[in-house]
Length: 500
Length: 125
Image (cartoon, rainbow over all chains, first blue to last red):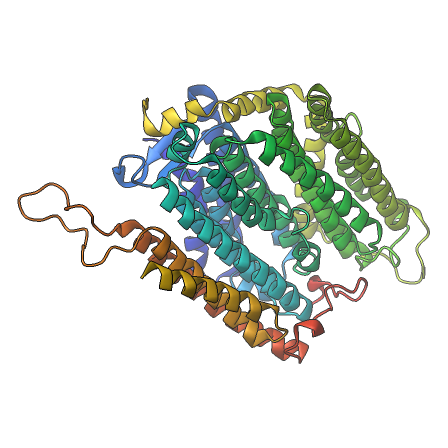
């Protein structure tokens, strides 16, 4: 029984409750929001430290023994994801102070933000399929409202598409969970893994179920060809929300895919994981090609979210220890780099008044610091040394070469070049070229806003450099986590105790 | 009984998907709720319909007499219904607001998020 497993869920919950109690007190809400963000991040780090020292942690809610009760379980992969959720939560909580308008704050922005974080960390920590569905819904409902909050036309239209596709995916997820229970008689992930690996379930039936989960999670993760909702909706809310969604929501879908395709559905790896790899390649290519045609920074970056999801899936499809290490390192890298880019584009918007590349320009001359803050995560995203993306991509490419999957390696390298092209386009258009219509001056950032906006971006940009120059601890952590993923018996034992 | 339920479930899924592919907002919401009902009923049916055998422990025994109805699928369905209820209530309000601001109930008419350059910045207000 460990309180550390519960804290990442309880802390955002309490923060949401307290901010809701002070509904009319904006100042108190803003302070509680930051304190809650810090506490969540610290709790997540505590959990990671505990899992690193003592191995996989599991606890049974209400002391109902597994597999009957609801299990919370944290292996290194879960713990790393919770830490990333904590980091994103803190960064966005601070950035929101400078970028969210009073009307949104008055209508419950902060309670929703922390409810979303609670749903995300619940999804990372649960060890039960139906409970995963419930956490998905908690997260989705909070995200629905965050996306529509403010009620502008674009937001409502984006939210309509986002809500519809997510409800469809939830219905499919629920259907799959129901059939899974009828086939196995259990919903506990460890017990499912045990049943399917011991051959109690027909492997063809298990593969059908695996495909149903692939579609359900694939919609949420934004895989090819299920991603069309993403660039149609992600750019409509305020940039802090877009950054949080891009950092966490699709990644929860990827997390669920990694979890079920390493722990549960490994009965027919030749078929399922080859399919994953094909989808990975198509996701990368369509995402990056979609980005080429865009001139709106947020839409352009939204398409890049999709192509980066392809890399994560590529590692899962290769399914070796090195490849899964790559997935974890890439996950950490892409969450940081991607949200940094979104947050920087928000500052560009504040300073220059637009998200449209055609109207932007000349920022390098007046705001060299801001240009640098864009440049670092952009190069990291493209995978140039010495930034974090280089090591992540190198690990994945090496894993691909070792398993002699040359096609996917070639695709991933070409997509890297196209990503670099896309990033150079933003750089050239927004920062380098002369500004069209020189008449209006750039707006300077006011000093309290300055700290709230620049602080989080500086931290994220610095992290892309630090994780690039000192990549070894992260890669060690990733290797250890990947070893746990590839060896489910440890996970099963932590949850169920000794089974035959 | 199972056969009838299976046909009903299939019809619900088909009707739900058909309604979602129409262009009206109202039909979209109806389609979404039909999908929800279909999956609830599917969980209920696929886990075996046992009639007249509640999972109650008789006096003097330690477990109910086999075969008894599995209570877990019903607990799952109950949870799913509650969640579905909340989400549908939200969806209805959202669709109504979208109808008011876009001034159309035709799904093909809501394209402002697709047109690059026309998207306004939410921070402007």
